Length: 116
Image 1 (cartoon, rainbow, N blue to C red):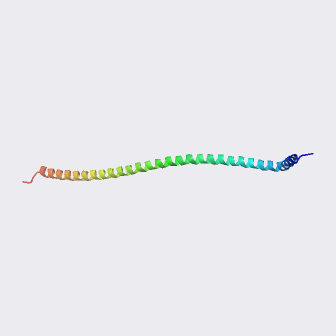
Image 2 (image 1 turned 180 degrees about the horizontal axis):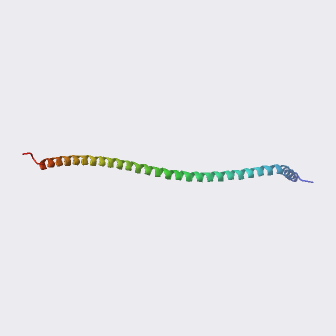
Image 3 (image 1 turned 90 degrees about the vertical axis):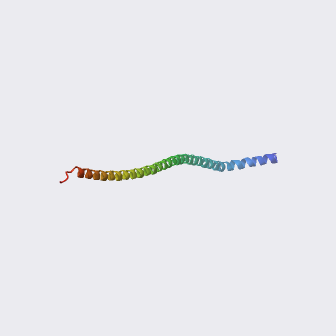
């Protein structure tokens, strides 16, 4: 005679055998989903690294632009200063030319023979 415990074990084994194919297909689906999600994570990590590189490159370019803008501002100030200096030299040259012209006129007047 089969004991009650043995009947329970047989019944449980029978249920496992009946549910086995269903459980295996569910497990296969879960493994497939896991592999697909792992690939998506790997793709996302690669994209994150690419974006991190672009962010670093963008920061470097931003720093270079700021440096260039500061240099441009300094050069504009230098150009402005040099233009003012050139204007000052033009004024001085004009004044010197006027003084030289006056002096030459004065000398020429003295060197001209005076009528008796």
